[in-house]
Amino acid sequence: MDELVFDVVGYWTELKIEILQKYAAAYSTILTKNKFWHAYIDAFCGRGVHISRTTYEFIEGSPLSALAVEPPFDHFFFIDIEGKVVEQLRQIVGGRDDVSVFHEDANGVLVDSIFPQIRFDLRRRALCFLDPRGMHWNWEVLEAAGQAGTIDLFVNFPVMAMNRRALWRDPDRVSENSIQRMNRFWGDDSWRKIVYRKRRTLFGDEDVKEPNEVVVEAFRDRLRKVAGFRYVSEALPMRNDQGGVIYYLILAAPVEVATTIMNDIFRKYRERS
Image (cartoon, rainbow, N blue to C red; front, side, top):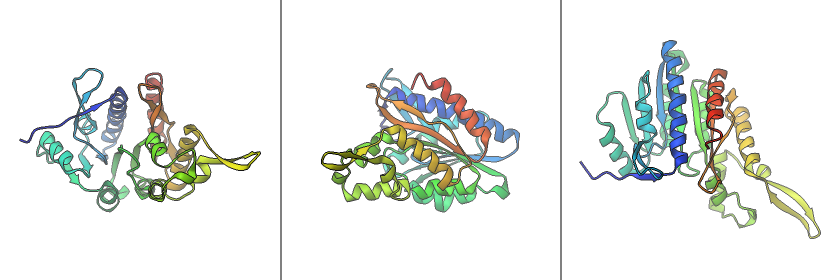
């Protein structure tokens, strides 16, 4: 077996995994009771095990956390584009029949291969976790999940990465490459009108950047009106050691009970995040 490598993660990652596992357990309980075949999909899954920056102990990543859920999911789809990450995850998970591991770009494999299997007429459902390390999803993935009507989508909305790459205070300084990446991430260029508003000064109009809260609320609205999810949870801000918001956690789902459960979980974590 090759030498294993582990990422060191902050407490906000530990909270995120706790929240995911709590929702996954509630989700699997309901789907099992109603005799639905149901899968767990982890689109940017990582190595499976991390080291806590707080305790320096090993903690389960999202894939192993999902594998431990009771009652269990019927199948697990783990996806990562980094070969060494996928190789290590396969070593940790082993040759389970109920696990499919993909060394691919999640954007393609989700839309082309996995989502089409989660069909309403086959009584199939899935919980999909989108946890990118930056602006790495394409909007088509979210829209495909929303249009399917069979998928609960739990997303990490990476607002800090967005601010670093594309949502600058001076929009004229943002590179064309970053603008195009943001367009693919958001689905079009409508983010520009949301992120910036005009302010009149003595020297003419200038662009003023809106706060994170405005951007995340626009994203929640987009999940409903554009992606087609009927219900969208509150957004839970996850903060770093300095109190800055790194990302927001949001659940989008086809049924109301899903967001009711998640909002209840979020309320219990709001003071800790």
